[in-house]
Image 1: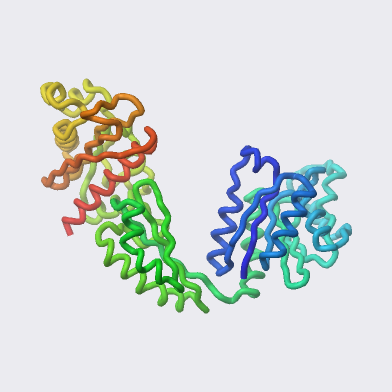
Image 2: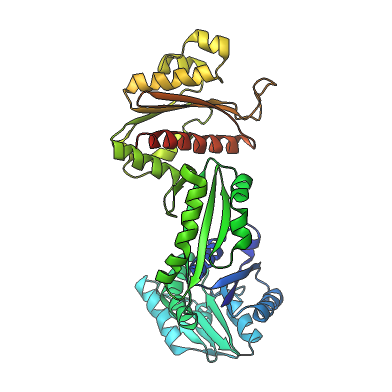
Length: 414
């Protein structure tokens, strides 16, 4: 089964609202085995919207439109979809009553006349009740095609989709898609894809789809099957082969697990405490760790020592080290790391110092040069890294690299 998504609203085209509905619907449809080949966004214009619907009817089994079901004059989705399918509109008494009850619940006594527009329903349509707003959803079937209209507000669209649309689609499409995510860190996107090119060239079912993230590459392995158990069996050997090829660069096969969560989990497993000492990342590394619930069990402190004076006063970096080697150096990163360990009596410490740009680089020390130090229970390492991109990207990539370094050093404890 193939679905097409049409998001309606001039505010989406103008960038006033981020289109989260399309991302949500695509993900949910994929999870129940429905393929999405096209997405489009159309403004509040009847002619263009009708053309988009007619095009979608030619290439998809299910067309899902979101937005444009409200009471105002520019809410045209329902009327335009009905016209495209050759259906007339009629006033639905049940929808009127539900709209009236909704306003009573929120203690609104005056119901403006335009609200009854939402009770106009295409003939022969199935009404999808809206428990969180006034505009009902609509499901229309015509000549083997299904057109589904959903309200635009996510707090109305999501419950309606889950309560009414998913059960309908699952009856029509008994196949399921089962997927597993393999998350890799420390290997570039192009290199990672090259390592599994033979698998991707030969894939049929299951398939492997790469997704590049900052400092990471995620591979989604997806199988079409009759049921979830059969899907798991298809995916299992492919995931096993990816783990074999990437080794300890794979940090999880759970989609919901982040790199920082993995680091915290290992720290808890070994009963270790950690501290960070940052310069160019300005606290981003500590912030990542603090995103993890329960991190207070293992995380002692995050130090931001941006100025040389702070490096000396807080971390005990020697003045002669800074003078001879500079703030961005292996020697400074090492002293930052050891100073943090001594100050907080921590088992693990990570230090970061570098040039994030866009200014400050020299031929000897260009923008993107970063030193990352890691101390784990007496073992020490300092790595020289060269990153590219904007100031923000260099800082973000540095944080991921630092987390991955501490993860890999912690693995040596097992």
